Amino acid sequence: MRTTLFVSLALLSSVSAALAEAPAAPKQMEPVPTAEIGKLAPDFTLPDLDGKQVKLSAFKGKTVVLEWFNPGCPFVKKSHSVGSLVETAKKAVTAGKGNVVWLAINSGGAGKQGAALEDNKVAVKTWSLAHPVLRDEAGTVGKAYGATNTPHMFVIDPAGKLAYMGAIDNSPDAERKSAPDGKLINYVESAIADVAAKRPVKIATSKAYGCSVKYAN
Amino acid sequence: MRTELLALLAFAGCKCGSESTNGIQASSPATGDKAAAPSGPPLASKAYFRVDAAPDQPACQVDAPCEAQLILTALGDYHVNNDYPFKLVAEATPNVKVDGTGTFSPKGKQGTMALPFRTSSAGTAKIAGTFKLSVCNDENCQIESPKIAFEIPVRAAAR
Image 1 (cartoon, rainbow over the protein chains, first blue to last red):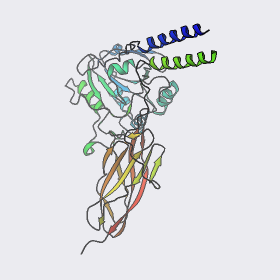
Image 2 (tube, rainbow over the protein chains, first blue to last red; image 1 turned 90 degrees about the vertical axis):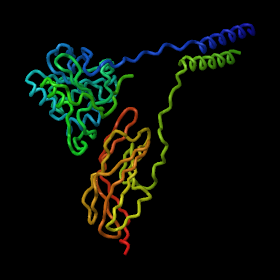
Image 3 (cartoon, helix red, strand yellow; image 1 turned 45 degrees about the horizontal axis):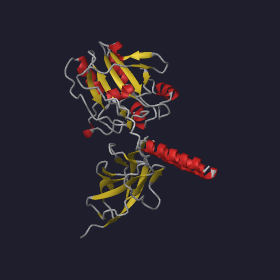
Image 4 (cartoon, rainbow over the protein chains, first blue to last red; image 1 turned 30 degrees about the vertical axis):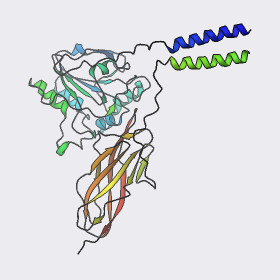
């Protein structure tokens, strides 16, 4: 019995030591953001709230606006109820006469704030959104674009190149009431106008404000 | 003997489990600056913030520039949202003229809102308005607009 115990102890000790000295497992590499102003925007295919697949490159030849979205985020709620996202998408799409496409993308991981399918469907109704909300639960597309906030806006020109990335406007209260000197600038509307006029986008980047994107990891 | 062996197994298992995290330690929740929340009833509060009048308000004098000070304290695992444009939108109160919407200075879990004003009568100056604020934790940000009101003693102008 004593011999058995010693053998067991020796075995346990060696197993324990082996595990203690086991090399660290390689860390999983985070996708590196590849979106860059003036460069081709990363292509993607994502499902909308009805499961229909939407492919970015299918819109080549049009101006595409990407809006990172989370209906549970207070900044998104403010932006869509009293801020610069009220009716902006509809106006841009209408004024673009078929040449402007608006896509919202929710990169929230399963179980995270605002990621549930039903929450997004309710938000579409509440804010009368006429554009698709795409689901990016794995966060791959969000990370490829370097989307950090909701809302975080990207404008892609008809050639598929990124023309603008940043905030929707210069009022980080999301209520259009905190623009410096009271001069509100809707960066996305401004970028769309510049792209349509085939002139360089005057303000191509700005600091996004709002909630963090609730990535799965 | 069997009991001893089981205890050893349990010990070894516990040790192995610990090491198998590959050196990654479970992190405790970030607490940020451990500023003590002011005592006494707040001017406004929720589970994740409280707003108080600063205990040491600057001495104010009639017809001289003065400054009301508010302290925002983020509670629990929340911190002050440094990117938010904090504002105190003042309401009209008797004999008080507020200049602007205040200047907010964040510091970890607290921030101070300084609101310049003048008053034309001695006694107390009532400052009232909507404090637009935001606090966040790792998961969520909150935007709040509580109504606040408090009084500041004002002494007569020196003759």
